[in-house]
Length: 361
Image 1: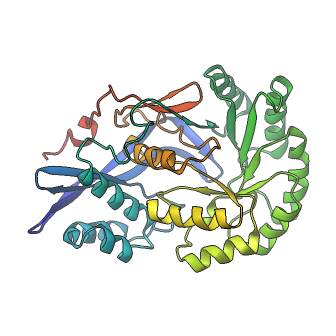
Image 2: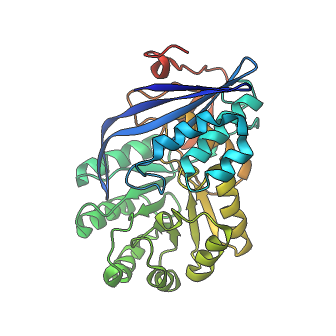
């Protein structure tokens, strides 16, 4: 961990690097995760402190570049430029944009991490979420499924693509034998694991389980193949990684018009923060494309911002915001998962000591 300070007449800014440790190794089609690197941007002004999480996702985010930390240093040196100018100049660094948005929102609303006061932050309403099932041996996946269902989840999302297809098919069959479509909604996320030549056949086989949707069946960047799949798939397709690295509004329009996906999935840390997600949502709704929002393995600081923003968007679909319990050293927060909902317990306080215990502020 390290911190660096940059001073100016109006504000001072610094950042901290923090490693989040998974409670247990978590499998994706890109490998096994044991740690998640993240950064916290901290700005101070007139006695108030703003904190924003810059949750770069190594190996996935468009801003996973060698100069990432140098850009974060630049933000700190130039914090006096203000939120709007910084965001405009950092359009290709989505996690920095989101971190800046969070930090300035905290300054605008001095109550700790209260970005968008709503019925959600008042503890009067919750956000329906899907229960995330990580890849692993079939018995491990089945154990997770039982735990999520016992906890009250009515929508599950299964990561697939790491095991052989038949084993994963068997896991989904196991679920459907006990829980029919009206009782349990199933989403699957392939993370681009299928080859274009075999994807449609696999989607046909999976369709007998009445799945809600499948995320990114083939790798991103194959627009023609993806458009063909969206037109012919018996399972609605949701674009995920396909959106990464597309920042200009005209390019977003081009992608949506070319592929015509039933759904898109938005991650503020990967898609340009609140301003970037607002742009995607407006374009998607124009052509009647559905959408939902998910977290991208942020700590509770970033997850809190995503949740508060998501609630203001009023999507009726279950969201992908159930990642707060993944880490041994997460930041204690008012967020809690109960009965398949993400809720905010306003009586609980934030505990930032894991973040600052090795640093003076």
